[in-house]
Image (tube, rainbow, N blue to C red; front, top):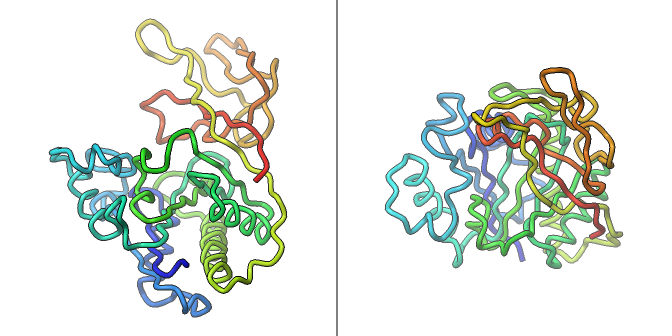
Length: 287
């Protein structure tokens, strides 16, 4: 049974769709069709929201490993993580049945549901969302056990992330907001149907399993020597095959993909600029 649901926006303070949705629902606008669920709404990082920045000192969505939660770090986000863990968790012994953490990306990922394991609940959730929202993407990040992830959503008994783009940091796009709202409502509708045993037939669906991060080419000084090729830009979840251009260097030369066929996403994500991550790879799977 899914009874208590935490809906979280503002884990990153400049990802505005979740912030706006939570603000709206905090005013009492939660649809009454989800009356059997105890839905609680949270704005996670108010200081970052006020400053319209991703975080103040450290990425809040990387603070929820057991190691970080037990550490003595005094950064604003590390301290905040402990407070949120007390409210939503505690991790490993949570009172919250499901934590839904809402994000935006500058990449052209559309509406993407991120699940952290392929168990019965998450497979049914993925299939349900894909059935009612065919344009959605399902991304499975099961490269490590759920508890080893440092994401905020792992504070609950179960947790998922909603990632919607493309949206510039710090602004609100109506079309992206509507996709965010639609996917959030789909997740909540699934919980209602799951509890009532009314899921109906849920056919297998296409999904993507996270692979590796691909870095920008760097010189000996750690400076970039190339940028995302225009053929790759905005082509999230489109097959990338050997021989296709991925970068163009600053002398006008193309750098070609020489790996196996993959499905890139988080392409040119602004939040990963300091990390020099160009995109992430994924394999196509069925759930």
